[in-house]
Length: 422
Image 1 (cartoon, rainbow, N blue to C red):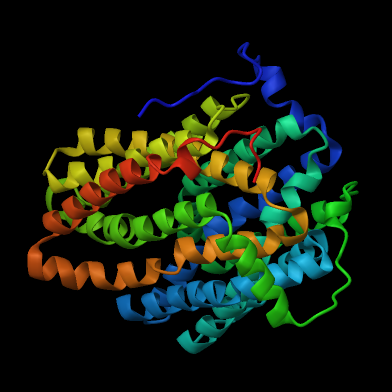
Image 2: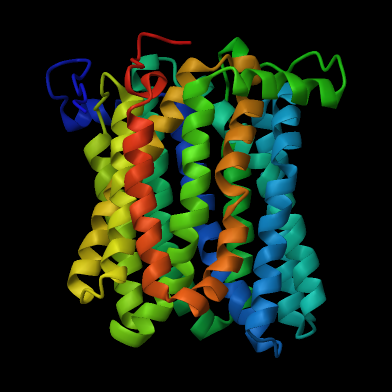
């Protein structure tokens, strides 16, 4: 399928114009605060895992604690979208940052006291997850209100994606060093501080768009959810791409995360090899973000869907038994595709969805994309024991290629242009 990649404007923008969105006061403040809190958040899982192990727990206990963070996020997302649409994104996100900062400060204090049973960690991490479940849909609705020039919305999402990619690479590496020298409590205390910085940045915003004003709150929460769901399913391009992402997380990404380390342990040099693979995936995401700055494809959903084909490459390389260098190279290309996809999907949703329901639709989109992930994580190991890791990974790669081609052929996806808003 031919993809129209005509850009608006046609001339290739200079680097200064690509980051011109940082000249907008509200976006600049938010970007600094969000990037700082992201760095702290990316450090925390490493510290939590070693805190559990240091308390005498094993792999099962680490799994329980990690699940205690994910499950509340999934459960709270729809309600978080309603709350953000009713009360306004900025206030909801500020409250979520304060809540998560307090949780991490308490967590650090508990660890520093030397009395941190696993059940306490589960409870604290669950509250942390609640805060994330409220924050995420509000984030999707806030960004358009930070950018006065709508032509710069894609650049804003690209820069936020770059911040996530850099944090994914730098955060865990920093956390490993700090945990080894000072212990996990120090990492969680630092995370609490970064949430405080994020909250301070949100408090300084002066949003200009009426879209960010709180709603009147009339009607029931259930009615708001029904309205959001109706808006979500009325847009084929939206639910089709969400279904695509959900099945990707179930069939491709979850097996890759579970079986990739196992394959690396056997054939790619163990943890060092796997660290290289994931590090290059993050580096690819950074590179992809840089490439997307200042670029606005004429058919964004088509380009984003083609970019998802790159996710098949690492799983295929592992399934084929390729050595470390090709596997790492495949992960690099997948990271580039991930950044392109994330930027364009976020920008199209924010451009084409009415502001008054944007948080709810963002919540349904996130829920659909991630709800099957835990099932994939749980099933990958037992399934690999039956049919082999290569078969599971190979199936995932084949699925991703087939699904990408199929979704690219859907007119609601392939023909949608920036100008043809639903």
